[in-house]
Image (cartoon, rainbow, N blue to C red):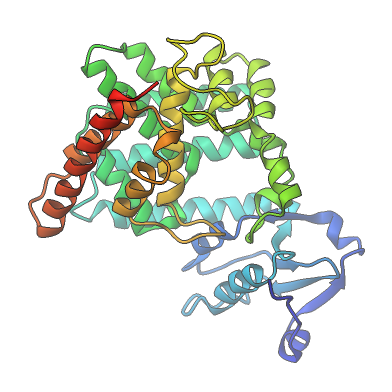
Length: 386
């Protein structure tokens, strides 16, 4: 990884302070992925900083940003990605102003998406509601207000998404068309509820279970609230030591959620969502189905969440990776990662993707052929499943 050097132009244009100055105590790091939501905002009335181990650069001053070309914001993002020691920061007392601009930007972007033919308006609006709820969980914690809004958001998902055949394709299109609107836990919640609703259709679930799956998906990463922001927000590859800290989030989630008013299953899924169907996951190395083995098996809601979690992560653009197209993402899951998932649930998930492809374009037809081949392969795996 390259180390940033301050150019003479930056030295002349920007205020630079040592990291040990009082300013460092006032800063709060923010995800580079959120910065593109500021593109097009006419007036940014707070400073954006680039924080490095040796110094802090006031890279964009209030009123300095040029809305026409986004150059300063783009340069700021590039700088944070060049050096894994670099973080984009704002002053803590400017966070509310920053969040207000982010919300305004989301609203404008959503309006544009609603005018596109391949975006279902109701699904897009519902996705936005649960995205905001997910972000509140991480910024405000498990407060009574956040928990109440979470239940409202989940009700919106149940009413507007789970029975809509366009849900999966619309969600995919939103994530791929505008990565800045993406929220991981919101996406996992929606996908988990859709898989659970398919089980309901097959007579293996109940309406209450669909809500439970949505709730588990929304809170599955709650343990990441306990991970230091500088590790979670790191744009580059994690060191082995940092990754070990991140791997603690299932245990943190289990403890945090067990002490809340949420049903016990939510804590269980937070604890188990990085296990693998054929073993080798963490933190306990569980395997197979809980229905078959109460001691070492993985709960069905956890097995559902595992599929939603991986698919959503592969599909999305993150600070440390580019987005992966839907077919490629599925190919990775169905080949390199197939031992991670319950083949029965994986088959249901692939069927959901197939059903969402309603057009008859050449690309859709080829994709359906690919999916049918994968379904045949899964059927063979089912015979050998645990």
